[in-house]
Image (cartoon, rainbow, N blue to C red; front, side, top):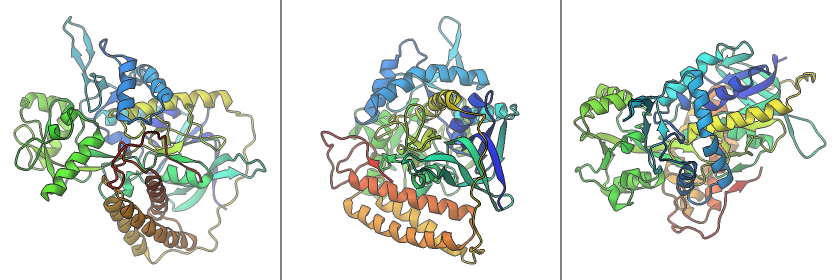
Length: 529
């Protein structure tokens, strides 16, 4: 019999969205936060740039909305974009109250104000940041606050396996918790929750090259899909234009704020190329910049391009980008006097589980917030520094909805036991490793920055073969971290491919050589379970 835990609210994921929601609910509810690894490990921790909000008197909500709509290439939900921009400042002020120390500067009249930077797609300076390690500052502050609450339990090193729906004659399903795998004891347990929230982040690990940490394996999207939720816009995978290209760099991201502060993209011969692709040059949206870099690399047969900010003073560079300066210096690159080698890498999943403005999914008592969700904010391309903002805004919105609908006097249910009576320990772990590498390689080659119908068909054929093989493996062997992640990644890969095949145009992050033009009328790509 597997161990069962009970709580009012189960939050699967421990990044900015999940921890913000937990802190909002801790006064009125018993909360469990499930963290796949250590609580600091996640995409939030590695976010460098900052969070967008209107703090400058020369800026406005309308400007923020317009910039987001332009970056989203015509298929953002304008109502959701405005809702997010209007709630941005209050959410940032809440974060400041929690203790996040955003960079400040002295104004001309002698007062101190927040230092605002500018990134691609933004018409004004509106990015609050903590040097070039904003995500780390946010994550560490939220974790500190979480540890001060006795109504929040954090389960570290736990994988969510699948959501549990309540048996019902009604066509509308109701989530009552989840099966989880305790990586410490290697046992399956369960959690019964009155409300369950997916805050698991994105799925960029489906690609061979990614800026994301290892935990970004699309778990929430796959679980929600299996539970009966629709997904949308899965074809829009954002490739960050500038990841450090070095054999010892791993997945180190070079923040867009570098280009916001004047960094120039150069070919290996030193010539600048972005003005040839877009009048906004280095400050064009990420899809345009990533495609330009990809084009130049393939045209020249080059391993990388270069990002150059050496024309700025060494003091300016060290003050604004201390993390990047130290990292590159440790690899023998002095960014104050030489350009940095860069390549694009999968960075952000713009699509996800369909939700409303309160974060509610198609399944009763199941919510999704943050990168795992499709809210309509990003459309066909996410604008820089709107991602952490989305986490904060929709966490607060979901918290209000949960507080008003949570019934804490209901009895906890006895969940169905997990059946592993017919499974054995695997002696073929090499199968998982082989499938893992094959999946990520063909997704990079066939479903990457530039696509064709033939490439997508090849990818679909291979993913269907992998799905059958992995499902057979899943049914016969005990679960493990790699098996659970691979099962989810293969499901997400299928959703990405099928979504990409549905979109017969090139828009935003989805660029196909077979349909290079933008269709006159289109909306989100919705896939039904």
